[in-house]
Image (cartoon, rainbow, N blue to C red):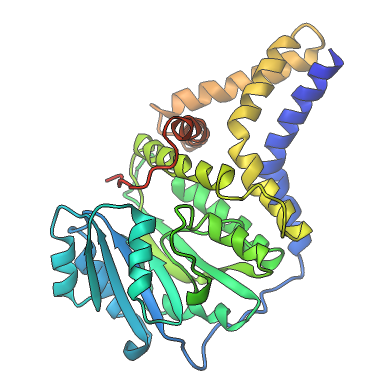
Length: 371
């Protein structure tokens, strides 16, 4: 019985720690530390901005115009659109809108499309964006400025999600929480993941031919080279949010099926080369977060087994059941606390289902969009 109690309290404690304790601990550790990174550029480097796109005829013209209007010397900015087997007018419209290079590729997946774009790129710095992400005018300057510090290998900006009033998806609330965590991580050992909408690195740090290269793998690979990955909060991009929670579940399920390839096959769990501080961040923010479905199952199962061995276990089971009921109600009742419970449950479930998808078929090479 003692063993069951230890397992129950450890699983519950790890869940509370990864979602609440870790951010609080980061805040305490980062107090008094302020970013000392360059915020502007005396001599802007040449930048190749890569947009990998699949069937994006509805947004690609706006994206090209957005990039060409950035506050960055035009002779030092190259825009490359890599159309990954698009069956619509993505490539045609990108050319007409003024993209410097448009690659009309066969369908081979985002990583391979980015590799093809990088192969033809001329910039010292590579920046990456999604087709539906619109950057603020000064975003590129703010994004590449920290790379003037030679200890920085990777920079990601801030995504602000736009959504219609009354939309059920609570991704915006989660993302604000996530950005706060990244702010503290950036002041310490470095961020543990980026985002595909706005990030940059030096050309010679990009390794083509790796299916696990991306915004999840780049930070830990930089850490192994002794380089920091940082968050540039002032480099802003706006992106439309998937309006429904069900759509968000499908999107995150696909993301997690790819993420588990990075975690389990891409080398994230190999401890060699990490500083103790970055290893602590990676375990707290990534390993435990991706293990949260298992931790929930263990907490629930051991809690049920411990009924009758103290009032505390009846109370804890009642609290778990109350949360599950709130999550179910969140699918139908538009109250924010219920919607947040529903959102959390769907995201946690997407991790588990994404893991099963990965076990069945590995990491998918191609990607789909959630409209």
